[in-house]
Structures are given as C-alpha cells and as structure tokens.
Image (tube, rainbow, N blue to C red; front, side):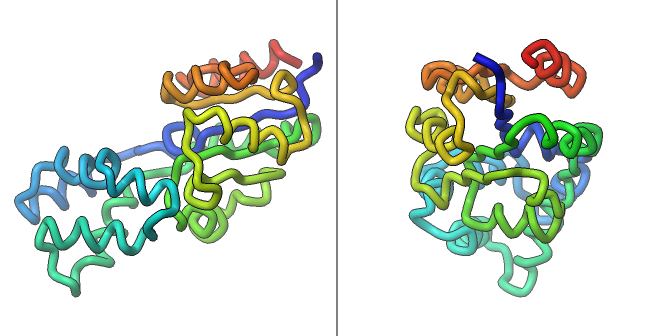
Length: 199
C-alpha cells in the first residue's frame, strides 16, 4: 500500500535542545541538581498526569516550584529560561511544506495542555500539519496503541499508509504494533532518506 501520511514526534524531533546552558545556569543559581529538575518535570506521576491532561501545565509547574522553593515572583522567568534551551529543527521544518504537497502530515506528542499554543505562538508551525494529536487533549499517551490508531484515523489513512518518526524506541515499537511503518529518529538525513525510500 502506498504511503499517504507522515506523523512526527515533537520533542527530540521537530524541537530539540540546542544549548543546555540556560538550564545549567538555573540549576546553579538555585543550588538544585539539574537532573532533579528534569526528573520532576518529565519522570514523575505528576508529569504523567499532566501529559494525560489530568492536571494543567500551570498546576504541574506550580507544584515543581513549591518543591524546589522557587519564589513566586521568579517562577515565570524560571519557566521561560528553562525552555529557552530548546530550538526549532529548522532543517527539518523547512522540508515540511514540500512534504505536505505529497503527504498528509501529522504531529503526535506526549505533551501537556499548552503544546498547541506553543506550536502556534512560539514556533508558528501549526499550519504545517494537517492534524495535531496531543496526549493531554485526548487522554492517551504513547506507546498506547489507541493513540496511534487515533492519529491515523484523524488523518484519514490506514495504519500501513503512514510513516511515524519518534526519538524514543518504546514509542516506535508501539507504532509498529499499531501497524504503522515506524522508525527511530536519529538525525534529519536518516529521516529524509527513510521518507524518500518509502514513496
């Protein structure tokens, strides 16, 4: 069956950490190990609940700030500085308009309830996709097979008509279990070669 859709992960693929210095500076300023900030943000029960939409991003960050004793007046700057370490993968993003001529494009991300506004306001790339499936909005997370099934259904294609790219092996395996042609993202050249070979 021909490939009619390509679905991309967000973090680690479309947006990547380009300079950890701002985060290192935060950790040093507040005397907190950076790994502790990462753990609280990404690897706790609360972070899972935020990714499932059970709590808001604001609630999640507020709890982190309270645990780390960040003064309320400094919390907004803390969040801004943390995310300033990330940058858009412009080499890949620049290819999306040409790909959109030939394929339905989707984004599938385990992310909090603020991702849609981040895509629209900060990166301004929402229009490059035919559909956005954000875990906090649908109450499902990769590698749950149902979220891949939802993503292809919303793009109007069958699973075996879709390519999927994610930097996390477990999420790639989940997509394969759901019937998609899935690949671990390693770099832009590798991804674009996979796309070219599957036309």
